[in-house]
Length: 260
Image (cartoon, rainbow, N blue to C red):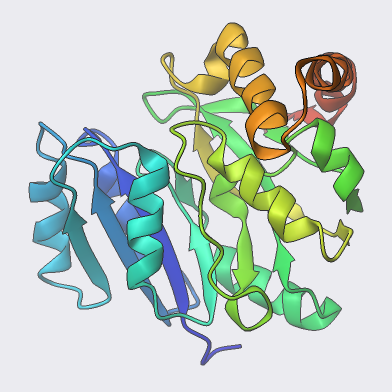
């Protein structure tokens, strides 16, 4: 696994406050054979300038710029088209990894002969202050469970290119990650997460996950467009989704006990 190249896809847009932390968390990985492919979605701030300074000192980092603001789906697909790694991993420009993230996940995949895995993660606020919660997932996540609720944090997923090839990412601006995980899980039916937290997710006030209405709207669109269901069937799926989201998924969010 030490020789396996991991391609890390990082879309970014106006991320000057966070991009340095995100890139440094990649550079600090104990698994050092990686390439970071950063695609800027037409930022109007200093995101590209900050990233360029670091990239000029580290040949493993490549930067590409979109000419128009196109959304994270197109940015991720652009990064995917440039990827040359044995594995594909994902990290948004406002999140960050723990130093042993790649090493532990690759070892876990090899040990259990898995073409895909993910991990638990912790949450932080916009200022980077850790919140007292860790987001976990079922120890054996089935396709049916994923169908009604996205348990997989985008910043934690890794898949094996030799098994899947390069998986195209939906062009929609929202929920591309859930659709990709469903595509990944469908042929293998069940997957196991690394049972520990390996990353930090930044909870932002304007994020899709912060808006309950947007969450409902975009998930309904997945049942309609991605699965091709009619309105009645999509509404029935949404009822199960809401039940799972409100009553089942919260059981996997654990309150962390501060050390004294």
